[in-house]
Each structure stands twice: as C-alpha cells, then as structure tokens.
Image 1 (spheres, rainbow, N blue to C red):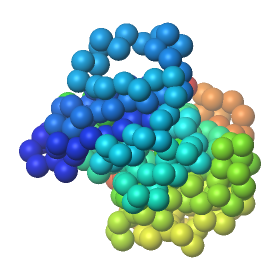
Image 2: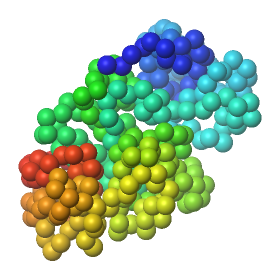
Image 3: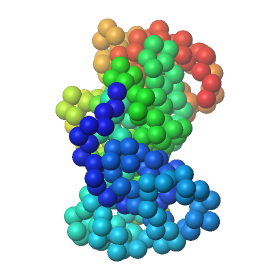
Image 4: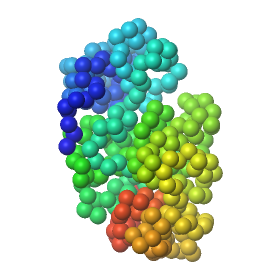
Length: 317
C-alpha cells in the first residue's frame, strides 16, 4: 500500500505547468502527500473548461506562465504538452530547481512492480495486451500512463503484490531519471520532432527508459527496427529482443508462421512455442510485431507460455 509517511514532497510548493489531464491529476495528488500545488497554464479558466472549485487546495495562475513563479517554487512539474524551452522552465533550470512530471513521481513511489512501454507506434496495443496477460496470470493489474488512468490518481489502491503496466510517451521520458525494472522500446521512428527538435533528441528521450533502469533490469527492444537497435548500448541491464525476421536467443521471435519465446522470456530457457500467426485475432504484420513484443515483455515478467497463448487467442484491442 502506498504510504504517505515521510514523503519528500511534504511541505513543498510545487508549480504544475499545464492543467490538462496530467496537471489535474497532480493537483489532486500533491495535497495528499502534504505538498502545495500551484497551477499555471497559458489558457484561462474559461478556455480550460475546468471547475477550479474541484481543486480547493491548489493556487492558480492562469492565462500565462509567469516566470516570477520560480521565486516560490520548490519543484516544477511539467505536463506532457509543455515544451522544456518555456522561459519559466528555463529560469527554473538556471536556479537548479528540480523539474519532474507525473510519470516520474509515480515510478518513484509505486509499491507494485512496473512494466514501462514506449514506442513510436504500437505501444497502446502492446501495453493493453501485456496487461491482459498479467490479469490472465492472476495478478491484479493496473494499466495506464499515457492511456487510461493517470496512475497517480489510483496509486492509493495499489499493493506490492499487484502489477502495473505503464505506457510512456517521449514527453514523459524526457524527464525520467529512474525507470521500471522491466521496460520496452518497441520502435523509434521520426515523431514529435516539432517538440524535440532533432531525431537525436527524440531518440535520447526514448532511450531514457532503458538508460535509467536498475542493474538487474530487463530491456526489451524491437530487433527489426533501426531506431530500437541504435539505443541498445544505453541499456543498463540485460537486453531481450523481439523479431519477425530472425531467431533471437533472448526474447520472442517468428519462425515460419509460429511465434516462440526464448531465453529469459521462456520458463525453461529453451524456445517455447506460443501460437501460430493465424491464432492472432488482430490483422496485419504490425500486429504480429506487437504480439511478439508483448510475449517478450510478459516472458521477462515470468508469465508462462500457456497464459500468453490463451490471452492472444481471445484478445480484442
């Protein structure tokens, strides 16, 4: 169970930049740990279409992002759509004020094991399928992050014996400095370059997911994707692969029309058959890749092959 005792945020003034889904979750959660949320957004209250009375313990500075807020901030929390080049954020950097987001605050405090998943494409399907595999294996499972629930909102109900599957965007990963023990980068193709500026910066943001894992972590990467292969050397733990085009010693692969798990994704260490391509309800080669990714991830988490097989055959995205 999540504990409120001794949280480092107690008594801190936390400036939330951006008051959409993630910002609102932060404004609800921060008072629970004894912090004071101070909300700023470039939009007015009317433009946000939010009832501010629902957040009685927050202070609001709307219709702009005044740089003067750094004078009272102990920490800055950035919502996903907010560029880190914002003058308020740059001023905070100059003053060495900690900058974070809802995803990092959750990862640092969640009592249950977390699986983190990112990718330029396929991450929602893969995240959902992994969640279903964990549920089928008997775990109480929470699926959220960039999809579904903002996980801070539901963390109070989580227990150490539960499991969490978390979809993460490049925006969230820009500020990630500690990562889940099991983490996957499905693929990295040009995306959000209006925000990140260059492909190199975009790849660096994605790579944060595996560059900040514990030493005993497991990183699952798409073998058939150039971008995912390029970040292999940033991984701090073991690397597993999934591939439609080659047999891999650790992970999941396609041989003919059959899907297998192997190595650390297998319960025996040897290749174990999961299903045939025709067993996958979702059509298209990209969904074969998504299913292989889910099998490698679930296998790394100790889910047995028969559970994967049953889940795949009945799965609906």
